Image (cartoon, rainbow, N blue to C red; front, side, top):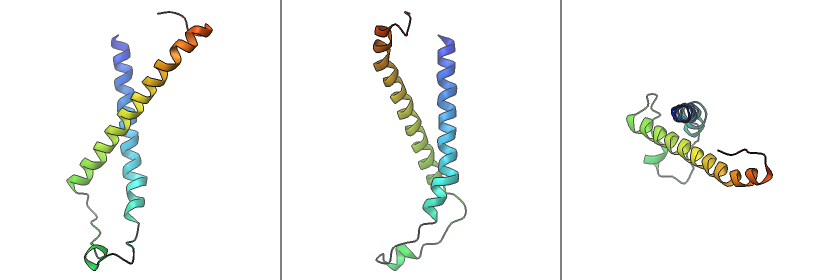
Amino acid sequence: MIGNVLVTFVASAALFLSCRLFLQKRLYSDLQSLTPQDGLPPSVSNTKLNTGKSWHSNLAQSCFAICFSECTILFAMLMCWVTKPILQERGSLTGE
């Protein structure tokens, strides 16, 4: 029981950190490099590029990483729940 909880916690933490690092290194920098469209008003298109990250940017990235990792874990649990009876029926999975 404790082993399952520990494995789940470690997997969740690893998935969260990988999502967070992906957001910081790839996705966020790609979004920062986008140029504004010609049809935007001057107040929107002439925004300053802030080199330091603000607290709301960090909060948004962390919230997205938490939500994505939790959705991934729930999807994996659902797939295990769905495939368990099929594997038991075939004899590939022995009882509990």
